[in-house]
Picture 1 (cartoon, one colour):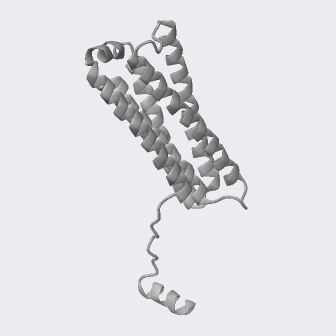
Picture 2 (spheres, one colour):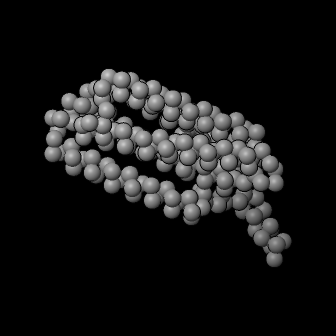
Picture 3 (cartoon, helix red, strand yellow):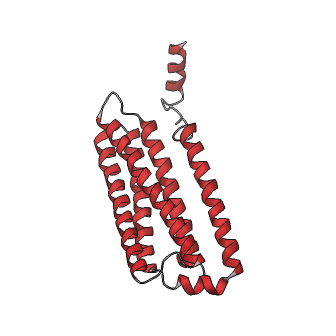
Length: 199
């Protein structure tokens, strides 16, 4: 039976069709979809409150540092590209390359967190606390997102630990880390659009 399958592959040009599958596993996707639902509720609530007081929201929005927001967006988009490349490296059996790329993703995550904390400190020092509805949403959305960034860094640390051990190295683990990190990036893009860009 095995010989017949091999013969068929050879007759078809010796090429195997790449198998398609959903990266990661069901537990990770359950977690990701649950987080997207929760953030989606926050986003809807933000839009409802903004519709009730557009002038107040717009006035407070002017105090955000859009330059830092753009920089953080570029940082996370770069990290998304790196995590994709790390999955490709892991699938190709290049564990060393995958580890280096995941470290690059972690560096981007730490840089994002440092910039965000600096931005928070500057806004609080200027007196923009959660006393207004806009800044209440701002600190909750960016704070919960930063928590997810921190959790993502822990997950990526586990990915590196597994990649270092040939017995534990699994492509699926790298894919799970990538799935979670893409969610973190996607959420930030929506947060950036709602809080910094939308007028």
